[in-house]
Image 1 (cartoon, rainbow, N blue to C red):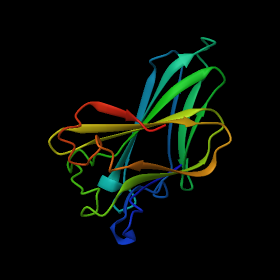
Image 2 (tube, rainbow, N blue to C red; image 1 turned 90 degrees about the horizontal axis):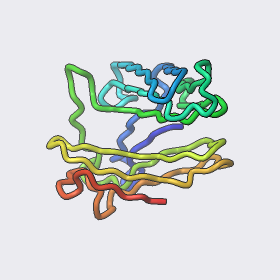
Image 3 (cartoon, one colour; image 1 turned 135 degrees about the horizontal axis):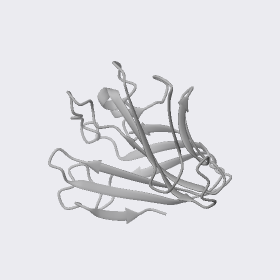
Image 4 (cartoon, rainbow, N blue to C red; image 1 turned 180 degrees about the vertical axis):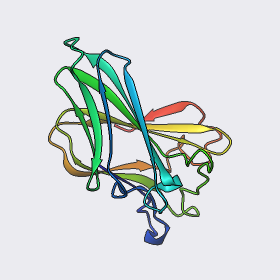
Length: 182
């Protein structure tokens, strides 16, 4: 997967969240539901917004209760891949909030010109759900969820609109409200 923000009416306003080309990264977790692993990588260029990508991977279900089964998130050659063993359900959370010494403070709207988040999905071999949470500098949060990403999807663009009534970057009236865009 590649995450790209922007691509609205003004290409010049595009803001890249992550192109997954900066460095390879891997997080693996095995075992029982609730088992979790994290990994954070920092870079010094503009290929990752805030110069840091954090990944948290959690096992949600282990159908066979086998401690040797699990999930892995790997980032190689511009793609983020999430893989589960048979009988495993997991949640992968990617976070871009800046580094510990330099928190992220970015105008994701590109001066008001960007209209949506764009996520390029190369393929999905099972069903998947995508959730996007954005928090502003005042701690106000808005969430969008895209369901129905199902087996056989190939090279699909997922657009999550910024013009949704409850989803704005300033989001003062959107705190802790969700919207399903399926």
